[in-house]
Image (tube, rainbow, N blue to C red; front, side, top):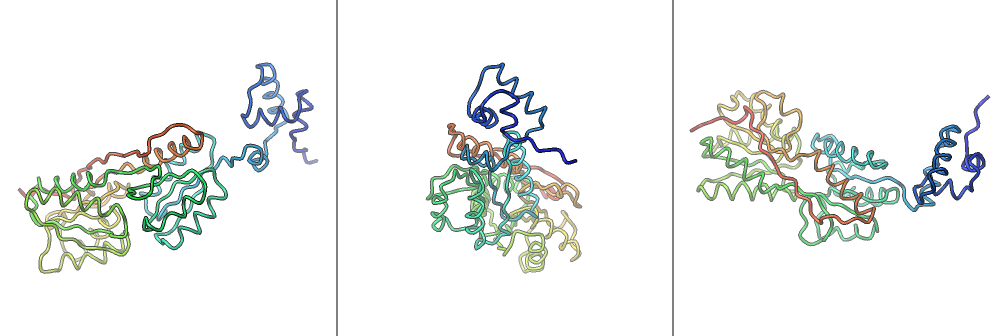
Length: 330
């Protein structure tokens, strides 16, 4: 015979209290005397009572869920961000609901509007031009944004991409490289910051940088652009890529074309994804601490939801990870 599922009325009757008392105790809306709380815990455990999340949200006005919109979940950089945000969500008793726009700005608004109806707040990555983002404020949910904003005032978490670009360019210059190139992704706000850092470093040393652009920040695009860069009339001796996926695709195709890495060209990326450690040669990269970005964003959003004070901007400092894909030419 199937066991009857315990209800809030069953708990109230067994504990000798009202259903309102049980509801307030379960939802954390009110504290009671130690004796009452001890009795309630024992009865709830004995009966195997589990509160109804939907009913709970109707009482408290909260779903105990937060939303995270990422640009491409197949990119390990974003997967690490999800991992960090999910860990903090679980620690605070929240469920993380994930949305993936697949690098398609047209999908962002309908996805976020749908997600906003199911969560207490949102963490957002966006490729949408900032001038077209005002509608996000109409979602009437706490928001935390990833990256740089110049017009809207939203709490945000950002990596110091300018510093990261400067660091990797300085590393290559110190190794004796004179002809550097940057394989970028101009649709990203972060692309300009990285390129600005690279140029600031190289301009101070009167060194040029050739700039190439891609349609997607993917390994396939890195492969596709390789012949343009390596078989052109002015081949660079070092290449900085917008992210590690572009760098890994480029490296694979360069070796297919018969070039030796890093003897013929040094290569570096951004993100420090796990795969970069296991390529040949292992990839030099700027570690943006992706998982920590997710942690910081979730902590900031939950603080806002709880009405606690939090800094408007949290900046994650980059770290240069030097591996064998860059070589000394001095």
